[in-house]
Length: 403
Image (tube, rainbow, N blue to C red; front, top):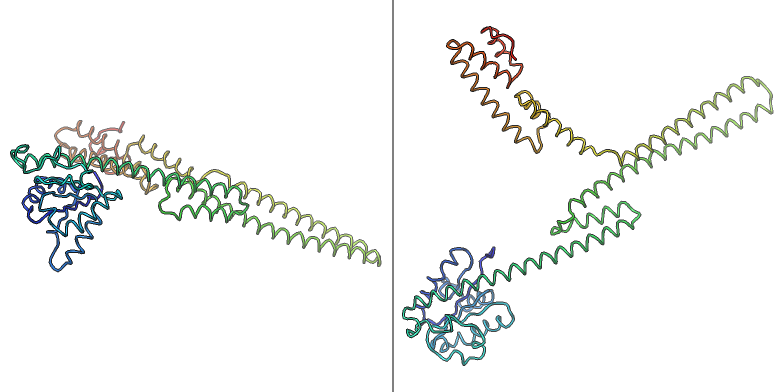
């Protein structure tokens, strides 16, 4: 049934109030279920503009029930306002108008009413005893037809919602393909991030939300790495410029040595020392470039989150295999959050209850049955290995080494 009740407007003459009451009692089950909400002029509270209230609720009605009788056609307000607006909304397919024939009258002479399917069955008037000896049978027939009307409306509504959802998904898919195409042809990483953020900014888009978030995360990481590498390259470039200056200075020094030929040996040693320094600087620069290369390679390296997830799975497997209180406590301390934590806590609590029961049973039979007492202490150590108090009890009872 619809998620929100359908608004049902009932148009009737005051002389037919008793028929309205009986009709409402037969259709009350649908209002109780939350399928529909009935409105008629007696719903108007004190102090309200009755004409404005009638026009407002008629304009917002999904279904309009017309209680047809001679008195219905005699009402000027019904003829000029309610019937006129209801038929117009039916022609525009904004509301469904259903005539309910109460008493014999020439309703079929009204051309627009005659084209509508009237109730009860075969449009036999409710108060025509030749067809309905008991009017309650007629109202029951109306209720059955009304139930089918609601089912048809719900079927149409479901189809409309499905079509709307499919159209929205098609629009989203087309938008996604467009931004993926633009991102692939864009040379700017910042522009790619902006494109996928534009997709995430649309609240109704959900098909590729996780994928868009992952792309943004990877692209932003790549931007950060590129910026880091670029900064390192700039530093290396400045080092090369310093190296060039040193070479020029060394060459100038050698020229001075050639001109003066003074202290030739000392000058040659100094020149060699400076050359070694330049070679060391070049080696450092090459090392920096190598580091930058590996930083770039790190972008495609193993996924830390996947490694952490694998470690979590392995830790949980070990805790399950051990199935002891220390193993489960250690797992929960090391991994305070995760998909298995609730199961681990339940398993730990179960072992703790079993351990406490064994200890209580052991305390009760400590003197009555030494063999059973030792067996219970052995079971307790199996659940909580290393419990010094239980080990002391075993030693005092001379139970021997636990198996």
